[in-house]
Image 1 (cartoon, rainbow, N blue to C red):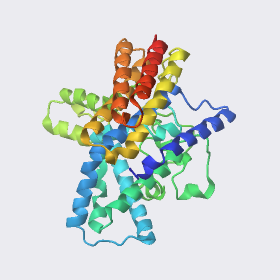
Image 2: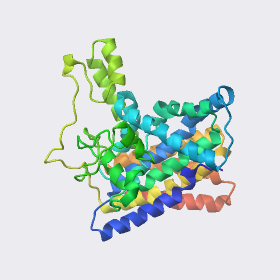
Image 3: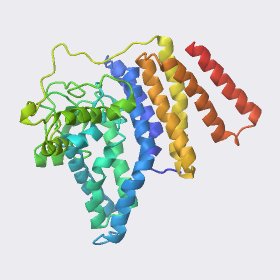
Image 4: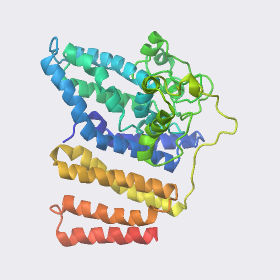
Amino acid sequence: MNLSPVVIAIPMYFILMAVEMITLRFQKHPGYRLNDAITNINCGVISQVTGIFIKVLSIGIYVLIYENLAFYHIPNNVWTFFLLFFLYDFCYYWAHRMSHEINLFWGGHVVHHSSEEYNLSVALRQSSTQTIWTFFFYFPLALLGFDPVMLVLASGINLLYQFWIHTEAIDRMGFLEKFMNTPSHHRVHHGRNPKYIDKNHAGTFIVFDKWFGTFQEEEEKPTYGITTPINSWNPVWVNLAHYANMKDELKMIPKWSDRVKYLFYKPGWLPDSLGGYRAPQEVEDDYQKFDTVVPASMNWYIFAQYFLILLLTGFFLFQVDSFTWLPKILVSTIIIWTTVSFSGIFEKRIWYLPQEVLRIISFSGLVFFLIQSLLPLPILIGILAVYCLGSFFWLW
């Protein structure tokens, strides 16, 4: 069983989101849009699924450094864990800050900032590629001799802490604002207003921003999102859009030295011959959030199908260690396919209907493959037949 704190906390995420929705309703705050919230969760789902493969690399290298190059193997106890947690957050600050200040690294982090809302579902909007650009920031902890198991635990708790600060339902928090990251501090971080951009990179402790000059108090209400909105509900495209834009802009740059600078300078940088650095602009007065409207029946269809795919995802993440590589690949494929399919429905793409029919059949086949030994075949086939026919009728 997968004992990652992030995976174990999955049921709590949805309970807290429900509590937040109720709280925001009492506060007469719109808070959530179905298409945005599902896209946020879809990005998190894809991140967790692809992370199964990527983390083999990142954790594996950390273990190699710990076992072969560590200066000392620090014993595991409460006090050393507290020290590790603080040092982990210090490393996180720099990994996070560089993810904003280096264009290539921003491609792995922009996903988290691309929602134009700010609620607990945004906390789940995680990138599938960020680990590639940030995992080496934690190698000093391996050299110091902190146990890899303790590192994974500290990482999970740090990420869990950051979940609850993605909300507008909580205002200021008194003396905690002085040294802890809070909803107010993190709302600043998600603002696209020029004064808020690249501020408050803290994970748990805001003191690092205050020490290193990146702290900004929340003043006017932030406008959330990124300076060039993605305008899509497709979580795969959300993960790839910045890299696609980088590819197009690299073609415009003639000199190889400038291409290297483009990769490692701040997002928005171009050589002087192409206009130079493009500084963030004030939010337009007529700015409107990206939105699409589908019939209510289709929203309910997506909600019902989404509940089923979340059950599959939860089962997969909890039991992933017992899966061989073929089931891992098959389940990962159907989960990612489903997230893209739902975006096609939200965006009313012409291809959504035929591929959604094919997805339903494939999903049923995968469920049959996974649980055929758990139920009598006539019952299992009957359940899947009802599911397929009901889904087809609903779509029709």
